[in-house]
Length: 336
Image (cartoon, rainbow, N blue to C red; front, side, top):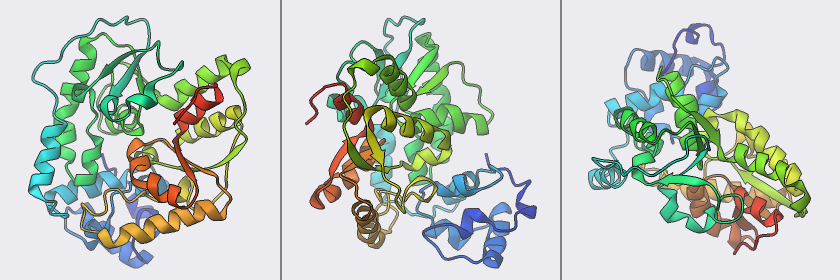
């Protein structure tokens, strides 16, 4: 939920003036922000690429993207193909009744989400094989609909998803994706929704596992470019786990232009938003930056980022891996 209480004293309007996708001076930024706070339309809404970076740029944690996404839905800013939109809404809908699995509530539960079908090979190996799990659309966070300006759908489905988790008696939930973790630790908090279980980020789990199995780790001795996900902007505290995992497995995260707070989007949503002309230059800029700073591998947290950029980095001689797969490699597992 957007908090406007600090906007009047904000001098730089970082959420707009620091945006990588539009050139906005401070005076224009103030004017457009005032319009949006009043619920009015603005060119900002149309020029937005839904990368969520503005949320991290805001020095007051006011969550400016929450304002944008609500207004983008109100004004149907992106005019997304109705068939595509309805197809996605239907595809990721929870079932009328959830099938209850037998769960030991005293142990953490791995939420494989809908990625259980897309990324089954990435969820294998000693780190994951003994974890009890849930999967499917009944446990899908739906935060991807921020890229489609449908925040109302997310709010509508949260209680349904939460009820499905509660029916299993889950106390600790290991989240495979930034969006899943971000749902429970950021989105719910800023919308005053109580979460009755403890969310655990996949990188926190992997880091703790590696710590407990240090004697089994064989250092990889490679340089990686790390590709942040959009939803990681809501949880920058996870960056420490990325760095700690890299240290444990003998990986150097190269210091490059488009990383950390200056990370750049993989461009997956751009075409859907009517911004196809931005896709190629954005991806080329990103991949060339990886090469310039000596990376051998591009490591991802988001499988969809990997799906989008994987072939692009391979064409330039880099190998694409999920960071979790690099951790598995360091434990001696063979990853294709």
